[in-house]
Image: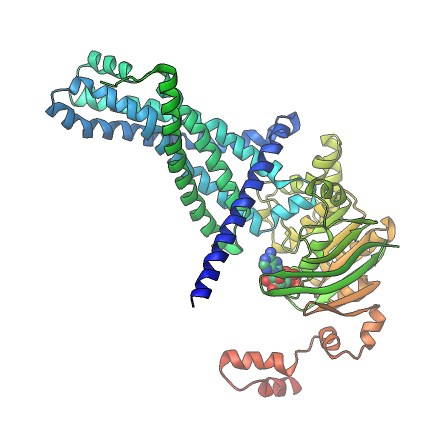
Length: 272
Length: 269
Ligand SMILES: Nc1ncnc2c1ncn2[C@@H]1O[C@H](COP(=O)(O)OP(=O)(O)OP(=O)(O)O)[C@@H](O)[C@H]1O
Ligand SMILES: [Mg+2]
């Protein structure tokens, strides 16, 4: 029995490592093909994806952003008011929106919206042999399908994040100033003090990597999905879960790394 | 010298052995038909020939070059010499029919859009579908999809065409037209054809040579005339379309009733 268990653990480890190796090869090949995308003939592949990833995500991203800002205002107002600091409400709301919650939730939202769609689309192409058809006709499916989707994700996630941040800032301001009666001037004064260019830059840099992770994971899951409609369904679920985990983990490492860079460049600075 | 050669090819999926030491050589300009029960690995065999699947053991050669070990980029060049009709068509469902048929032309040639449109039109007419260019694959019937896929497979005038069940799902008249098309391509353009089919009529009509695959092995390899005279029980039953007692017993097992005798009796009357 113990031998069987060890064997099982060994096999699982092996499979996991093999899958991770496959994923790395997939990533490497995607990156190697990127330069070819910027030839005129191939650019036509990019624009439909930009539309799909970017334009079509605008509504959900707007809603996500606005409500994050509004909820943050409602929740922190009580606490800040108790200690008589509601003038400083802007600092915490806008800092959270721009630096942490905004980029992360926007990425999670995108993982759900475009990640699911990409996995379903490529997975369906996989199980109906359309990927094989591409290969046979001499078009590498990674160049043809993955690269444009990956590039669209990398380019547009930061832009969507900025948009989401903007609506978060507006949402927070709306609730704080218009409904909870925090005066306008101090609200913006303390916001500007808390959020400097570096914080905004931090959110955007992260979102580029979040976008890349979403694109690569969703495409990979589509390419390796099991047979039939059930295989595609399972791949979609896995793709979302994996993207989510990747976002959370990347966020942790970026928090640490970017903080160190910040300290190295600007020295330590308090928020309040 | 043979154009395509499989040497001792074995392929497994997990525990399932699909091909077991299969060797097959195919000459230039010939039509070879591959028959065999559903699920014996005919499609898997075709995919080995264009490098979509790699053998676990053995070698695949094409035109004096070993291709199962070629990197993907080099394979691309080799594959341009092939046309492949997939069993389910594998049309790109995000593109319309004309874009599907024109895809290999756009990818591999520098022809002007007008010229491509004209070729697409000609290929679609060849498979009897001159008016569907603007439609999406989802709007076509199963048989129409298959014919569009065939038009796409022959768009580049390939030297070798692999047909995975070209006539399944077509009415008898249309099947015959496709048979004639396959023969015509072979006669006039010296195309090498490899046809997987369950349709014995079409097999007899097209084939210079018939190969039967059974449980991972090639159990018959000969001309249409030879297969009609064979004594091999499995081959004979396949050609005549008769199930064995054992296969009929499966129906009984599923239904929970007595096996074959009743069915045989009805047939006998
Ligand atoms: N990619 C794959 N992964 C796992 N198993 C596979 C794969 N492709 C094929 N198989 C298995 O290999 C066997 C042979 O499949 P194949 O599609 O070649 O059959 P076939 O002879 O073409 O049958 P049919 O006449 O029904 O098309 C089947 O049992 C199938 O389940
Ligand atoms: Mg098949």
